[in-house]
Structures are given as C-alpha cells and as structure tokens.
Amino acid sequence: MPRLFTGIEVPPETGLLLSGFRGGLPGARWVEPGDYHVTLRFIGDVDGGLADEIAEALAGTRPRPPLTLVLDELAVFGGERPHALFARVVPDPDLADLQAEHERLLRDLGVPPDTRRFTPHVTLARLKRGAGPDGVAQYLAMQPVFPRVSFTAPRVALYSARASVGGGPYVVEAAYPLGEDEA
Image 1 (cartoon, rainbow, N blue to C red):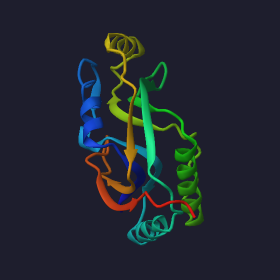
Image 2: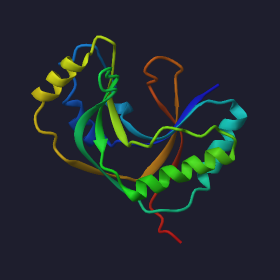
Image 3: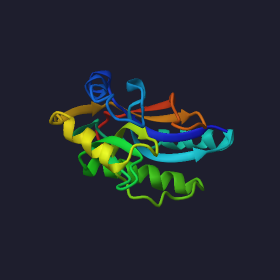
Image 4: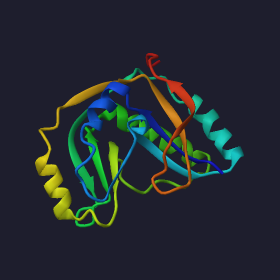
C-alpha cells in the first residue's frame, strides 16, 4: 500500500538556501533538501486501486496559474513538546483554494477528511524528544534573520513515501502542471 500526499515541490535554489539552517539543533533529524515540499493534503496508506483513482481525479482539478509562495520565518510545531522545525509559508488565498479543492476531491473519493487546520510550511527537521523547548529556543535565537524568499510553483505533485519514521525519500508519482489561465 502506498502512503500518499499531495504537495508542491521546493525548487533546488530555495532548498539550498533552506539547507543553510541545517545543524546545531540537538535531537533534530534533518530532511534532505531534495525532499523539501509544501504538503497540501496528507492522504495516508491507500490500496493501489484508490491510488489510481486519486491520480486520475487530481488530473481533473481546475486549471489555475502558477502559484508564488513566500517563506518568511523559522518556527516549530509542538510548543512545549516541539516535534518539527519548519519554514513558514505566508498564507495565500490561491494556495488555500488549491488545498481546499484537494480536500473536496479526496472526500468525494471516500478518503476521510483531514481535521487539522491547513498550515502551509516546509518541514526542515523532525525533532526527537531530546529537543526540548529550551534547546529549540536557543537554536532559533542563534539563527540569522530569516531571509524572506519566494518561489513560483509550476506544478503540484502526488507523492509517495516510505512507511517509516520521517517518511523520506519521497517519490513523485504524478505531476500536474499549473500555468493554464482560469476559465
């Protein structure tokens, strides 16, 4: 059974910039720069038949122009129990609309809804229990000012991941170009 999710690839030049934040955080398992992405919708483990239906349905999403995404700060998920270090994606109505379309499409195929609020981000590291809030705060305080960076997403991808801790490496199973004007 493949473990699937939809997302937007981070281009190599942006990945190179983000990789400069690697290191110096005890308990961090760093994501490989080639695996950086913005998750639109985690789907989970599905059988081959449903995976094919998902790939076909995604091909029918409404045409839209390429998206420009802006990363503006480093942050963590988990508060007192931090579990992920990420680069925040500035909320964008076009990105939210794309994510909502994926959510509707997947629910129509019988995939259970995602109950978490959509928080667009690029995960840089997964944090083990040893990475407490004090260590994370110290790491963040020692980082240079995060350079606001933007990139244009020319396509959306359907990814598969290994069923393991951390998931990567990720494989693009199908890609759906952006760039067509809306009708």
